[in-house]
Length: 321
Ligand SMILES: Cc1ncc(COP(=O)(O)O)c(C=O)c1O
Image 1 (cartoon, rainbow, N blue to C red):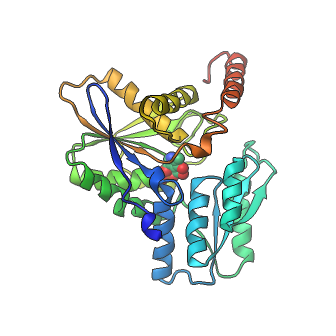
Image 2: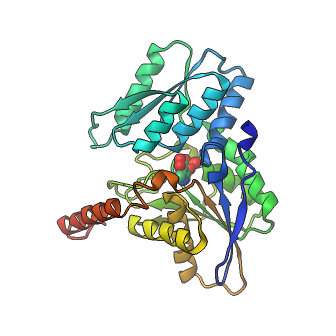
Image 3: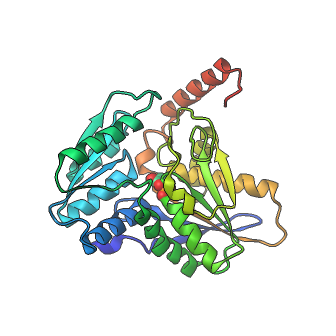
């Protein structure tokens, strides 16, 4: 069963001017790229006796990482406490519940108006209170990016020789750090393009409410210091939603929000940078679209977001958006 982590398909997407290959990470057991980190980190900690069968694993995550950790903790018989907040997608909470995760839900906003600080406060409280507990801390844990270096990065290099460009979405920074290091070892000239979303502070943009989960962050991940990034592209939510829908209609690829952002970045990048020879371009599509049926693929939700975003533009005189 656990062999269902990794060895995901790489598909060619027809595209004029570039050879575009997409690594479909939604084919992992729990449905996203995060299976790699969760499986690797838990195995590594058990093997090195940092944790044992009685350890309680704790993490703050409302999305794919929580679901992946719940999957692998469950299979290893480990207790898992997932700290979430009231903004969690209903389907994610439902999956976490059925996987047997213990859920602690934060409903009081912090001084920034978000929930992350209070989620992290709760994590430290739980860590202090529960004997033999371990906080995964995906933003700082080196095992996070090491997992991608040893699995996803290696697989990509074995599947495509001569990679000219690779585009990766960023949240905790684990994927891009691990993959960029491995890909540059095999293809020193390859350009690594980090893709982030408007409102995320990772690359120094001003904070703003974000509506699409999986990509972006309201803190700067420590792990990113070890990444090898050549260029950064910030994508807006409107383009992200449109590209998700385009990929479904045109190619039958039902992919998650961050994949729409990554594809938007590719299209914009090669609109500006005209290439003579067809370069080999790799994208990582981090998850499937099933968990976004009530958001990115829901017309009412999209209309609500559009109205919200346009009101903000009017209020700010367009300066911030
Ligand atoms: C859908 C999706 N895309 C991209 C990412 C980015 O991965 P990372 O946290 O390794 O930066 C994540 C992480 O949760 C994700 O869930």
